[in-house]
Amino acid sequence: MAGGKGRSLSSRLKMLLIGIIVVLLLTTILSLLIIIRRERNEYAIRESEGVLQGLSKTIYLEMEGYKELSRMIMIEDRLVKYLRADSDEVSIGLINNARYGIMSILNVTENVDSVFVFREDRQYLTTALATNQKAYQVNLERMDEEDWQEQILGGRGNAQISINGNGMLQRTNKKPMITIGRAVYDLLTQKRTGIMMMNISDALIEKLVNGHLRGGDLCVVGTDGTFLAGREELLQFYSPEFESETVTHLPVGKGTGRFLLSGCRVEGMPIVVLCASGIGKREFPLGNVYVFLTLLLIFVISIFVAGAFITRQITDPVFRLTSAMEQNRQAGKLEKIDAGMPGNELAMLQDEYNNMIEHVNELIKSLIEKEKTLQKAEMRVLHEQIKPHFLYNSLETIGFLAMDAGAENVYTALETLGSFYRNFLSKGDRELPLEREIRIVQDYLSLQKLRYGDIIHDEYDIAEDTRKCIIPKLILQPLVENSIYHGIRLKGEEGVIRISSFLQDGNLHIVVRDTGVGMEQERIDQLLVTGRDKREEEPSESFGLWGTIERIRCFCDSDDVVRIRSEIGEYTEIEFILPQRRESMGENENVPSDDNRR
Image 1 (cartoon, helix red, strand yellow):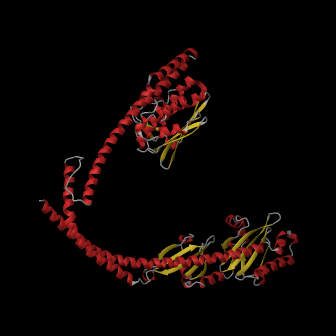
Image 2 (cartoon, helix red, strand yellow):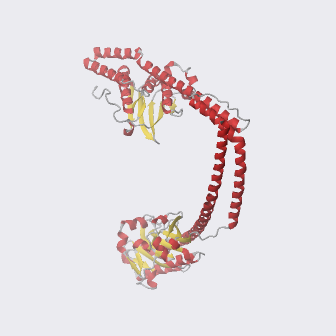
Image 3 (spheres, helix red, strand yellow):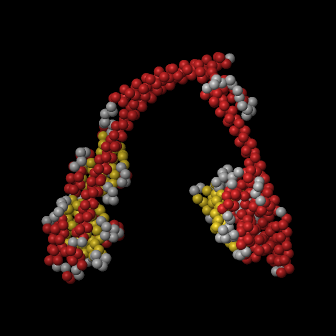
Protein backbone atom coordinates (compact mmCIF):
# COMPACT_ATOMS: atom_id res chain seq x y z
CA MET A 1 0.00 0.00 0.00
CA ALA A 2 2.85 2.33 0.87
CA GLY A 3 4.53 1.48 -2.41
CA GLY A 4 1.35 2.24 -4.36
CA LYS A 5 1.04 5.62 -2.71
CA GLY A 6 4.70 6.25 -3.43
CA ARG A 7 4.21 5.58 -7.12
CA SER A 8 1.15 7.86 -7.13
CA LEU A 9 3.16 10.64 -5.55
CA SER A 10 5.97 10.10 -8.03
CA SER A 11 3.50 10.27 -10.90
CA ARG A 12 2.09 13.48 -9.56
CA LEU A 13 5.60 14.87 -9.26
CA LYS A 14 6.27 14.12 -12.93
CA MET A 15 3.06 15.88 -13.95
CA LEU A 16 4.03 18.77 -11.75
CA LEU A 17 7.45 19.04 -13.40
CA ILE A 18 5.87 19.03 -16.87
CA GLY A 19 3.46 21.75 -15.74
CA ILE A 20 6.35 23.75 -14.34
CA ILE A 21 8.21 23.54 -17.66
CA VAL A 22 5.14 24.73 -19.62
CA VAL A 23 4.52 27.57 -17.19
CA LEU A 24 8.21 28.44 -17.23
CA LEU A 25 8.24 28.70 -21.04
CA LEU A 26 5.19 30.94 -21.08
CA THR A 27 6.54 33.00 -18.18
CA THR A 28 9.87 33.36 -19.95
CA ILE A 29 8.30 34.73 -23.11
CA LEU A 30 6.13 37.15 -21.13
CA SER A 31 9.07 38.14 -18.95
CA LEU A 32 11.22 38.87 -22.00
CA LEU A 33 8.57 41.19 -23.37
CA ILE A 34 8.19 42.92 -20.02
CA ILE A 35 11.96 43.22 -19.52
CA ILE A 36 12.49 44.67 -22.98
CA ARG A 37 9.70 47.21 -22.47
CA ARG A 38 10.85 48.09 -18.96
CA GLU A 39 14.44 48.51 -20.10
CA ARG A 40 13.36 50.88 -22.82
CA ASN A 41 11.20 52.88 -20.43
CA GLU A 42 13.91 53.02 -17.77
CA TYR A 43 16.36 54.24 -20.34
CA ALA A 44 13.93 57.02 -21.31
CA ILE A 45 13.53 57.91 -17.61
CA ARG A 46 17.29 57.96 -16.96
CA GLU A 47 17.89 60.04 -20.08
CA SER A 48 15.14 62.51 -19.13
CA GLU A 49 16.44 62.86 -15.58
CA GLY A 50 19.93 63.60 -16.86
CA VAL A 51 18.66 66.26 -19.27
CA LEU A 52 16.35 67.87 -16.69
CA GLN A 53 18.93 67.94 -13.94
CA GLY A 54 21.50 69.41 -16.31
CA LEU A 55 19.19 72.11 -17.65
CA SER A 56 17.75 73.03 -14.24
CA LYS A 57 21.26 73.27 -12.81
CA THR A 58 22.32 75.50 -15.71
CA ILE A 59 19.32 77.79 -15.20
CA TYR A 60 20.03 77.89 -11.47
CA LEU A 61 23.68 78.90 -11.98
CA GLU A 62 22.74 81.54 -14.56
CA MET A 63 20.19 83.05 -12.17
CA GLU A 64 22.74 83.04 -9.36
CA GLY A 65 24.98 85.17 -11.57
CA TYR A 66 22.16 87.62 -12.25
CA LYS A 67 21.35 87.69 -8.52
CA GLU A 68 24.91 88.83 -7.85
CA LEU A 69 24.54 91.44 -10.62
CA SER A 70 21.36 92.73 -8.97
CA ARG A 71 23.20 93.01 -5.66
CA MET A 72 25.88 95.16 -7.32
CA ILE A 73 23.21 97.42 -8.81
CA MET A 74 21.55 97.76 -5.42
CA ILE A 75 24.70 99.26 -3.85
CA GLU A 76 25.73 101.45 -6.84
CA ASP A 77 26.54 104.92 -5.44
CA ARG A 78 24.44 106.98 -7.88
CA LEU A 79 21.42 104.76 -7.33
CA VAL A 80 21.87 104.92 -3.55
CA LYS A 81 21.96 108.73 -3.79
CA TYR A 82 18.73 108.71 -5.82
CA LEU A 83 16.97 106.53 -3.26
CA ARG A 84 18.19 108.61 -0.30
CA ALA A 85 17.03 111.93 -1.79
CA ASP A 86 13.86 113.57 -0.48
CA SER A 87 10.90 113.79 -2.84
CA ASP A 88 11.49 117.48 -3.62
CA GLU A 89 15.18 116.80 -4.32
CA VAL A 90 14.53 114.31 -7.13
CA SER A 91 15.46 115.86 -10.46
CA ILE A 92 16.00 114.75 -14.04
CA GLY A 93 19.74 114.95 -13.47
CA LEU A 94 19.56 112.76 -10.36
CA ILE A 95 17.42 110.22 -12.22
CA ASN A 96 19.72 110.14 -15.25
CA ASN A 97 22.81 109.74 -13.05
CA ALA A 98 21.17 106.76 -11.31
CA ARG A 99 20.21 105.29 -14.68
CA TYR A 100 23.76 105.70 -15.99
CA GLY A 101 25.08 104.00 -12.86
CA ILE A 102 22.84 101.00 -13.50
CA MET A 103 23.75 100.86 -17.19
CA SER A 104 27.47 100.91 -16.34
CA ILE A 105 26.97 97.64 -14.48
CA LEU A 106 24.70 96.10 -17.12
CA ASN A 107 27.25 96.74 -19.85
CA VAL A 108 29.20 93.67 -18.71
CA THR A 109 26.32 91.31 -19.40
CA GLU A 110 23.42 90.64 -21.74
CA ASN A 111 19.86 89.33 -21.59
CA VAL A 112 18.87 91.89 -18.95
CA ASP A 113 15.67 93.22 -20.46
CA SER A 114 15.22 96.13 -18.07
CA VAL A 115 15.69 97.35 -14.51
CA PHE A 116 12.99 99.16 -12.51
CA VAL A 117 13.80 100.93 -9.23
CA PHE A 118 10.91 102.15 -7.07
CA ARG A 119 11.40 104.69 -4.29
CA GLU A 120 9.34 104.54 -1.10
CA ASP A 121 7.25 107.49 -2.39
CA ARG A 122 6.40 105.34 -5.48
CA GLN A 123 8.49 107.42 -7.87
CA TYR A 124 10.54 105.13 -10.03
CA LEU A 125 13.11 105.02 -12.78
CA THR A 126 13.74 102.40 -15.40
CA THR A 127 16.42 101.62 -17.93
CA ALA A 128 13.64 100.80 -20.41
CA LEU A 129 13.12 104.50 -21.19
CA ALA A 130 16.36 104.50 -23.10
CA THR A 131 14.78 102.23 -25.73
CA ASN A 132 11.01 102.32 -25.66
CA GLN A 133 9.06 103.86 -22.80
CA LYS A 134 5.83 102.19 -23.97
CA ALA A 135 7.28 98.66 -24.02
CA TYR A 136 6.14 97.94 -20.44
CA GLN A 137 3.00 98.21 -18.37
CA VAL A 138 3.50 98.90 -14.64
CA ASN A 139 0.72 98.02 -12.20
CA LEU A 140 1.52 100.11 -9.10
CA GLU A 141 -1.67 98.96 -7.37
CA ARG A 142 -0.25 95.43 -7.32
CA MET A 143 2.48 96.67 -4.96
CA ASP A 144 -0.16 97.29 -2.28
CA GLU A 145 -1.47 93.74 -2.31
CA GLU A 146 -0.49 91.57 0.64
CA ASP A 147 0.80 88.53 -1.25
CA TRP A 148 3.05 90.71 -3.43
CA GLN A 149 4.55 92.50 -0.44
CA GLU A 150 4.98 89.22 1.44
CA GLN A 151 7.10 87.82 -1.39
CA ILE A 152 9.33 90.85 -2.02
CA LEU A 153 9.53 92.47 1.42
CA GLY A 154 9.61 89.12 3.22
CA GLY A 155 13.01 88.46 1.67
CA ARG A 156 14.60 91.27 3.76
CA GLY A 157 16.88 92.29 0.90
CA ASN A 158 17.50 88.82 -0.52
CA ALA A 159 16.78 88.19 -4.17
CA GLN A 160 13.25 86.94 -4.91
CA ILE A 161 12.59 85.40 -8.33
CA SER A 162 9.16 85.65 -9.96
CA ILE A 163 7.55 85.72 -13.41
CA ASN A 164 6.67 89.20 -14.70
CA GLY A 165 7.33 90.72 -11.28
CA ASN A 166 4.61 88.55 -9.76
CA GLY A 167 1.93 90.35 -11.81
CA MET A 168 3.32 93.87 -11.42
CA LEU A 169 5.22 94.22 -14.72
CA GLN A 170 4.11 93.20 -18.19
CA ARG A 171 5.65 93.71 -21.62
CA THR A 172 3.22 95.10 -24.14
CA ASN A 173 4.21 92.35 -26.59
CA LYS A 174 3.17 89.78 -23.91
CA LYS A 175 6.59 88.14 -23.90
CA PRO A 176 7.37 86.81 -20.42
CA MET A 177 10.23 87.96 -18.21
CA ILE A 178 11.99 86.43 -15.23
CA THR A 179 12.11 89.10 -12.54
CA ILE A 180 14.71 89.29 -9.75
CA GLY A 181 13.22 91.50 -7.07
CA ARG A 182 14.96 92.92 -4.00
CA ALA A 183 13.94 95.23 -1.19
CA VAL A 184 16.69 97.89 -1.02
CA TYR A 185 17.98 98.89 2.43
CA ASP A 186 20.26 101.81 3.26
CA LEU A 187 23.65 100.50 4.39
CA LEU A 188 23.96 103.25 7.01
CA THR A 189 20.50 103.38 8.55
CA GLN A 190 19.29 99.87 7.61
CA LYS A 191 15.97 101.42 6.59
CA ARG A 192 14.22 100.31 3.44
CA THR A 193 14.66 102.93 0.71
CA GLY A 194 13.05 101.22 -2.25
CA ILE A 195 12.45 98.13 -4.35
CA MET A 196 14.53 97.03 -7.33
CA MET A 197 13.23 94.68 -10.03
CA MET A 198 15.64 93.37 -12.69
CA ASN A 199 13.93 91.63 -15.62
CA ILE A 200 15.70 88.84 -17.49
CA SER A 201 14.61 88.27 -21.09
CA ASP A 202 13.07 84.95 -22.09
CA ALA A 203 15.80 84.85 -24.74
CA LEU A 204 18.20 83.64 -22.04
CA ILE A 205 16.06 80.58 -21.26
CA GLU A 206 15.58 79.93 -24.99
CA LYS A 207 19.35 80.05 -25.43
CA LEU A 208 19.90 77.58 -22.58
CA VAL A 209 17.26 75.21 -23.96
CA ASN A 210 18.73 75.28 -27.47
CA GLY A 211 22.14 74.55 -25.98
CA HIS A 212 21.01 71.03 -25.00
CA LEU A 213 21.08 68.12 -27.44
CA ARG A 214 17.43 67.42 -26.77
CA GLY A 215 16.35 71.05 -26.93
CA GLY A 216 13.47 70.19 -29.26
CA ASP A 217 11.93 67.99 -26.56
CA LEU A 218 12.20 70.57 -23.77
CA CYS A 219 9.78 73.16 -22.44
CA VAL A 220 10.34 75.73 -19.68
CA VAL A 221 7.29 77.18 -17.92
CA GLY A 222 6.54 79.22 -14.84
CA THR A 223 4.67 77.63 -11.96
CA ASP A 224 1.74 79.90 -12.89
CA GLY A 225 1.59 78.21 -16.33
CA THR A 226 3.45 80.97 -18.22
CA PHE A 227 5.35 79.63 -21.24
CA LEU A 228 9.00 80.72 -21.18
CA ALA A 229 10.91 78.76 -23.82
CA GLY A 230 11.19 75.50 -25.76
CA ARG A 231 8.46 73.35 -27.27
CA GLU A 232 5.24 75.24 -26.55
CA GLU A 233 2.82 72.37 -27.35
CA LEU A 234 4.07 70.57 -24.22
CA LEU A 235 2.46 73.33 -22.15
CA GLN A 236 -0.97 71.68 -22.50
CA PHE A 237 0.30 68.71 -20.46
CA TYR A 238 1.68 70.84 -17.60
CA SER A 239 0.52 69.76 -14.12
CA PRO A 240 1.30 70.99 -10.57
CA GLU A 241 2.77 67.53 -9.97
CA PHE A 242 5.91 68.68 -11.80
CA GLU A 243 6.55 71.47 -9.26
CA SER A 244 8.66 69.22 -7.04
CA GLU A 245 12.46 69.66 -7.10
CA THR A 246 12.74 65.91 -7.65
CA VAL A 247 11.98 64.65 -11.16
CA THR A 248 8.38 63.50 -11.72
CA HIS A 249 7.41 61.23 -14.66
CA LEU A 250 3.91 61.04 -16.17
CA PRO A 251 2.82 59.15 -19.31
CA VAL A 252 0.63 61.41 -21.49
CA GLY A 253 -1.07 61.22 -24.84
CA LYS A 254 -2.96 58.34 -26.46
CA GLY A 255 -2.20 55.55 -28.94
CA THR A 256 0.80 56.18 -31.15
CA GLY A 257 1.08 59.71 -29.77
CA ARG A 258 1.72 58.44 -26.25
CA PHE A 259 4.98 59.60 -24.66
CA LEU A 260 6.63 60.12 -21.27
CA LEU A 261 6.62 63.66 -19.89
CA SER A 262 9.14 64.34 -17.14
CA GLY A 263 9.53 67.53 -15.18
CA CYS A 264 11.06 69.17 -12.12
CA ARG A 265 11.24 72.58 -10.54
CA VAL A 266 14.43 74.63 -10.67
CA GLU A 267 15.78 74.92 -7.14
CA GLY A 268 14.38 77.93 -5.31
CA MET A 269 12.63 79.38 -8.40
CA PRO A 270 9.07 79.41 -9.79
CA ILE A 271 10.33 77.73 -12.97
CA VAL A 272 9.56 74.19 -14.15
CA VAL A 273 11.50 72.31 -16.82
CA LEU A 274 9.64 69.67 -18.88
CA CYS A 275 11.17 66.96 -21.09
CA ALA A 276 9.29 64.71 -23.56
CA SER A 277 10.63 61.19 -24.22
CA GLY A 278 9.32 58.49 -26.53
CA ILE A 279 8.16 55.33 -24.67
CA GLY A 280 9.49 51.96 -25.82
CA LYS A 281 11.64 53.22 -28.68
CA ARG A 282 15.05 52.03 -27.45
CA GLU A 283 16.34 48.82 -28.99
CA PHE A 284 17.01 46.00 -26.53
CA PRO A 285 20.30 44.09 -27.16
CA LEU A 286 19.47 40.61 -28.54
CA GLY A 287 22.58 39.15 -26.92
CA ASN A 288 20.81 39.33 -23.59
CA VAL A 289 17.88 37.40 -25.03
CA TYR A 290 20.16 34.57 -26.25
CA VAL A 291 21.79 34.31 -22.84
CA PHE A 292 18.38 34.23 -21.21
CA LEU A 293 17.13 31.43 -23.49
CA THR A 294 20.29 29.39 -22.95
CA LEU A 295 19.85 29.58 -19.22
CA LEU A 296 16.23 28.53 -19.65
CA LEU A 297 17.26 25.40 -21.62
CA ILE A 298 19.82 24.44 -18.97
CA PHE A 299 17.20 24.94 -16.29
CA VAL A 300 14.67 22.66 -18.05
CA ILE A 301 17.24 19.86 -18.37
CA SER A 302 18.13 20.28 -14.71
CA ILE A 303 14.45 19.93 -13.79
CA PHE A 304 14.27 16.50 -15.48
CA VAL A 305 17.42 15.30 -13.71
CA ALA A 306 16.24 16.66 -10.37
CA GLY A 307 12.83 15.03 -10.85
CA ALA A 308 14.36 11.57 -11.23
CA PHE A 309 16.53 12.08 -8.17
CA ILE A 310 13.64 13.41 -6.09
CA THR A 311 11.48 10.42 -6.96
CA ARG A 312 14.09 7.88 -5.79
CA GLN A 313 15.73 9.70 -2.91
CA ILE A 314 13.14 12.03 -1.43
CA THR A 315 9.53 11.16 -2.29
CA ASP A 316 9.33 7.85 -0.44
CA PRO A 317 11.17 9.02 2.72
CA VAL A 318 9.03 12.15 2.85
CA PHE A 319 5.88 10.02 2.59
CA ARG A 320 6.98 7.92 5.55
CA LEU A 321 7.80 11.03 7.55
CA THR A 322 4.48 12.74 6.84
CA SER A 323 2.58 9.53 7.64
CA ALA A 324 4.24 9.39 11.06
CA MET A 325 3.38 13.04 11.69
CA GLU A 326 -0.23 12.48 10.65
CA GLN A 327 -0.57 9.49 12.98
CA ASN A 328 0.79 11.63 15.81
CA ARG A 329 -1.75 14.37 15.00
CA GLN A 330 -4.73 12.04 14.76
CA ALA A 331 -3.82 10.48 18.09
CA GLY A 332 -3.79 13.95 19.64
CA LYS A 333 -0.28 13.47 21.01
CA LEU A 334 2.75 15.72 21.28
CA GLU A 335 5.36 12.97 21.14
CA LYS A 336 8.56 12.43 19.20
CA ILE A 337 8.52 10.19 16.09
CA ASP A 338 10.95 7.76 14.46
CA ALA A 339 10.17 7.09 10.77
CA GLY A 340 13.55 5.47 9.91
CA MET A 341 14.92 8.37 7.87
CA PRO A 342 18.21 7.99 5.94
CA GLY A 343 21.21 9.85 7.28
CA ASN A 344 20.71 13.09 5.31
CA GLU A 345 18.66 16.30 5.49
CA LEU A 346 15.45 14.32 5.96
CA ALA A 347 16.87 12.96 9.20
CA MET A 348 17.56 16.58 10.18
CA LEU A 349 13.93 17.42 9.34
CA GLN A 350 12.73 14.63 11.63
CA ASP A 351 15.05 15.88 14.38
CA GLU A 352 13.75 19.44 13.96
CA TYR A 353 10.16 18.18 14.22
CA ASN A 354 11.04 16.34 17.41
CA ASN A 355 12.78 19.46 18.74
CA MET A 356 9.68 21.50 17.91
CA ILE A 357 7.49 19.02 19.82
CA GLU A 358 9.83 19.27 22.78
CA HIS A 359 9.81 23.07 22.57
CA VAL A 360 5.99 23.19 22.40
CA ASN A 361 5.79 21.06 25.52
CA GLU A 362 8.23 23.43 27.25
CA LEU A 363 6.13 26.43 26.19
CA ILE A 364 3.00 24.83 27.59
CA LYS A 365 4.78 24.24 30.88
CA SER A 366 6.09 27.82 30.81
CA LEU A 367 2.59 29.23 30.24
CA ILE A 368 1.26 27.19 33.13
CA GLU A 369 4.06 28.44 35.40
CA LYS A 370 3.49 32.00 34.18
CA GLU A 371 -0.19 31.82 35.07
CA LYS A 372 0.67 30.41 38.47
CA THR A 373 3.18 33.21 39.04
CA LEU A 374 0.61 35.82 38.03
CA GLN A 375 -2.03 34.39 40.33
CA LYS A 376 0.52 34.17 43.14
CA ALA A 377 1.53 37.81 42.62
CA GLU A 378 -2.10 38.92 42.64
CA MET A 379 -2.85 36.98 45.79
CA ARG A 380 0.24 38.39 47.48
CA VAL A 381 -0.80 41.92 46.52
CA LEU A 382 -4.31 41.36 47.86
CA HIS A 383 -2.92 39.88 51.03
CA GLU A 384 -0.56 42.80 51.54
CA GLN A 385 -3.34 45.33 51.04
CA ILE A 386 -5.93 43.61 53.25
CA LYS A 387 -3.63 42.61 56.11
CA PRO A 388 -4.97 43.81 59.46
CA HIS A 389 -2.42 46.46 60.43
CA PHE A 390 -3.63 48.92 57.79
CA LEU A 391 -7.28 48.43 58.72
CA TYR A 392 -6.44 48.70 62.43
CA ASN A 393 -4.40 51.88 61.93
CA SER A 394 -7.23 53.43 59.87
CA LEU A 395 -9.87 52.57 62.46
CA GLU A 396 -7.66 53.85 65.28
CA THR A 397 -7.20 57.16 63.44
CA ILE A 398 -10.96 57.40 62.89
CA GLY A 399 -11.44 56.85 66.64
CA PHE A 400 -9.14 59.78 67.43
CA LEU A 401 -11.09 61.93 65.00
CA ALA A 402 -14.31 60.97 66.75
CA MET A 403 -12.95 62.33 70.03
CA ASP A 404 -11.27 65.45 68.59
CA ALA A 405 -13.34 66.62 65.64
CA GLY A 406 -16.83 65.28 65.96
CA ALA A 407 -19.13 62.90 64.12
CA GLU A 408 -18.97 64.60 60.72
CA ASN A 409 -15.26 63.83 60.28
CA VAL A 410 -15.87 60.28 61.49
CA TYR A 411 -18.58 59.85 58.85
CA THR A 412 -16.31 61.18 56.08
CA ALA A 413 -13.41 58.95 57.12
CA LEU A 414 -15.60 55.85 57.39
CA GLU A 415 -17.19 56.50 53.98
CA THR A 416 -13.74 57.01 52.40
CA LEU A 417 -12.52 53.73 53.89
CA GLY A 418 -15.67 51.96 52.66
CA SER A 419 -15.21 53.46 49.17
CA PHE A 420 -11.60 52.30 49.08
CA TYR A 421 -12.45 48.67 49.90
CA ARG A 422 -15.54 48.71 47.69
CA ASN A 423 -13.45 49.69 44.64
CA PHE A 424 -10.58 47.54 45.85
CA LEU A 425 -12.60 44.31 46.13
CA SER A 426 -15.62 44.82 43.83
CA LYS A 427 -16.36 42.16 41.20
CA GLY A 428 -12.92 40.55 41.52
CA ASP A 429 -11.92 41.70 38.00
CA ARG A 430 -8.28 41.50 36.99
CA GLU A 431 -8.62 44.59 34.80
CA LEU A 432 -10.40 47.92 35.11
CA PRO A 433 -10.40 51.42 33.53
CA LEU A 434 -7.62 53.81 34.52
CA GLU A 435 -10.09 56.29 36.03
CA ARG A 436 -11.27 53.65 38.57
CA GLU A 437 -7.66 52.82 39.46
CA ILE A 438 -7.07 56.56 40.06
CA ARG A 439 -10.17 56.63 42.29
CA ILE A 440 -8.72 53.78 44.42
CA VAL A 441 -5.46 55.72 44.81
CA GLN A 442 -7.31 58.90 45.77
CA ASP A 443 -9.28 57.06 48.48
CA TYR A 444 -6.11 55.39 49.74
CA LEU A 445 -4.25 58.72 49.97
CA SER A 446 -7.21 60.34 51.71
CA LEU A 447 -6.95 57.69 54.45
CA GLN A 448 -3.16 58.06 54.67
CA LYS A 449 -3.51 61.83 55.01
CA LEU A 450 -5.73 61.23 58.07
CA ARG A 451 -2.80 59.42 59.62
CA TYR A 452 0.18 61.48 58.45
CA GLY A 453 -1.44 64.89 58.11
CA ASP A 454 0.00 67.46 55.72
CA ILE A 455 3.30 65.71 54.93
CA ILE A 456 1.68 64.05 51.87
CA HIS A 457 0.49 66.04 48.86
CA ASP A 458 -0.90 64.39 45.74
CA GLU A 459 -1.16 65.78 42.20
CA TYR A 460 -2.79 64.30 39.10
CA ASP A 461 -2.24 64.97 35.39
CA ILE A 462 -4.49 62.37 33.73
CA ALA A 463 -5.06 62.95 30.01
CA GLU A 464 -8.74 62.74 29.07
CA ASP A 465 -8.09 60.25 26.25
CA THR A 466 -6.50 57.82 28.76
CA ARG A 467 -9.26 57.62 31.38
CA LYS A 468 -11.10 54.74 29.67
CA CYS A 469 -7.93 52.76 28.93
CA ILE A 470 -7.96 49.26 30.47
CA ILE A 471 -5.12 48.35 32.86
CA PRO A 472 -4.45 45.56 35.37
CA LYS A 473 -6.17 46.10 38.70
CA LEU A 474 -4.14 47.54 41.63
CA ILE A 475 -0.92 48.55 39.86
CA LEU A 476 -0.83 52.15 41.14
CA GLN A 477 -1.77 51.73 44.83
CA PRO A 478 1.30 49.55 45.62
CA LEU A 479 3.53 52.19 43.98
CA VAL A 480 1.90 54.99 45.97
CA GLU A 481 2.28 52.98 49.20
CA ASN A 482 5.94 52.37 48.36
CA SER A 483 6.39 56.13 47.77
CA ILE A 484 4.98 56.90 51.23
CA TYR A 485 6.72 54.27 53.35
CA HIS A 486 10.06 54.00 51.51
CA GLY A 487 10.30 57.51 50.10
CA ILE A 488 8.54 60.46 51.69
CA ARG A 489 8.29 59.17 55.28
CA LEU A 490 11.99 58.28 55.43
CA LYS A 491 12.93 61.76 54.20
CA GLY A 492 11.25 63.36 57.23
CA GLU A 493 9.67 66.28 55.42
CA GLU A 494 6.66 67.10 53.27
CA GLY A 495 6.55 65.32 49.94
CA VAL A 496 4.56 65.25 46.71
CA ILE A 497 3.21 62.19 44.90
CA ARG A 498 2.36 63.01 41.27
CA ILE A 499 0.50 60.62 38.96
CA SER A 500 0.30 61.39 35.23
CA SER A 501 -0.78 59.56 32.09
CA PHE A 502 -0.56 60.14 28.34
CA LEU A 503 -0.71 58.30 25.00
CA GLN A 504 2.34 58.01 22.80
CA ASP A 505 3.00 55.81 19.75
CA GLY A 506 -0.15 53.79 20.43
CA ASN A 507 0.87 52.97 24.03
CA LEU A 508 -0.46 54.14 27.41
CA HIS A 509 2.23 55.71 29.63
CA ILE A 510 1.56 55.97 33.39
CA VAL A 511 4.11 57.79 35.56
CA VAL A 512 4.23 57.80 39.39
CA ARG A 513 6.74 60.30 40.85
CA ASP A 514 7.52 61.08 44.48
CA THR A 515 9.89 63.58 46.10
CA GLY A 516 11.21 61.06 48.62
CA VAL A 517 14.69 59.80 49.47
CA GLY A 518 15.30 58.35 46.01
CA MET A 519 16.66 54.95 45.03
CA GLU A 520 20.17 53.73 44.31
CA GLN A 521 20.95 52.37 40.84
CA GLU A 522 21.87 48.98 42.28
CA ARG A 523 18.41 48.73 43.83
CA ILE A 524 16.79 49.76 40.52
CA ASP A 525 18.73 47.05 38.68
CA GLN A 526 17.55 44.44 41.21
CA LEU A 527 13.92 45.47 40.70
CA LEU A 528 14.19 45.29 36.90
CA VAL A 529 15.86 41.85 36.76
CA THR A 530 13.77 39.56 34.53
CA GLY A 531 14.63 36.16 35.97
CA ARG A 532 11.69 34.96 38.04
CA ASP A 533 13.87 32.56 39.98
CA LYS A 534 15.68 35.57 41.46
CA ARG A 535 12.44 37.25 42.52
CA GLU A 536 11.83 34.74 45.27
CA GLU A 537 14.78 36.25 47.15
CA GLU A 538 13.24 39.76 47.24
CA PRO A 539 12.55 41.15 50.77
CA SER A 540 8.89 41.13 51.72
CA GLU A 541 8.72 44.91 52.25
CA SER A 542 9.38 45.52 48.53
CA PHE A 543 6.99 42.88 47.29
CA GLY A 544 4.34 45.43 46.32
CA LEU A 545 6.72 47.16 43.87
CA TRP A 546 8.37 44.20 42.17
CA GLY A 547 5.16 42.14 42.34
CA THR A 548 3.42 44.95 40.44
CA ILE A 549 6.25 45.01 37.88
CA GLU A 550 5.82 41.25 37.41
CA ARG A 551 2.08 41.65 36.86
CA ILE A 552 2.64 44.40 34.28
CA ARG A 553 5.08 42.18 32.39
CA CYS A 554 2.60 39.30 32.39
CA PHE A 555 -0.19 41.65 31.24
CA CYS A 556 1.91 43.03 28.34
CA ASP A 557 3.72 39.73 27.60
CA SER A 558 6.96 41.71 27.49
CA ASP A 559 9.80 42.47 29.91
CA ASP A 560 10.60 45.94 28.55
CA VAL A 561 7.55 47.78 29.96
CA VAL A 562 8.97 49.52 33.04
CA ARG A 563 11.27 52.55 33.39
CA ILE A 564 12.68 53.62 36.79
CA ARG A 565 14.46 56.94 37.16
CA SER A 566 15.75 58.29 40.49
CA GLU A 567 18.12 60.77 42.10
CA ILE A 568 19.23 60.16 45.69
CA GLY A 569 17.61 62.68 48.04
CA GLU A 570 15.48 64.20 45.26
CA TYR A 571 12.93 61.94 43.61
CA THR A 572 11.93 58.52 42.31
CA GLU A 573 9.92 58.14 39.09
CA ILE A 574 8.40 54.87 37.86
CA GLU A 575 6.88 54.69 34.37
CA PHE A 576 4.71 51.87 33.03
CA ILE A 577 4.24 51.43 29.27
CA LEU A 578 1.12 49.39 28.43
CA PRO A 579 -0.69 48.63 25.16
CA GLN A 580 -3.62 50.95 24.57
CA ARG A 581 -6.92 49.16 25.20
CA ARG A 582 -10.24 50.94 25.45
CA GLU A 583 -13.11 50.22 27.85
CA SER A 584 -15.95 48.41 26.05
CA MET A 585 -19.58 49.53 26.32
CA GLY A 586 -21.34 48.28 29.43
CA GLU A 587 -18.18 47.12 31.14
CA ASN A 588 -18.86 49.04 34.33
CA GLU A 589 -22.53 48.34 34.64
CA ASN A 590 -23.69 47.44 38.20
CA VAL A 591 -20.41 48.69 39.70
CA PRO A 592 -21.08 50.68 42.90
CA SER A 593 -20.74 54.39 42.33
CA ASP A 594 -18.55 56.54 44.58
CA ASP A 595 -19.43 59.92 43.15
CA ASN A 596 -21.46 60.88 46.25
CA ARG A 597 -19.19 59.49 48.92
CA ARG A 598 -18.16 62.93 50.22
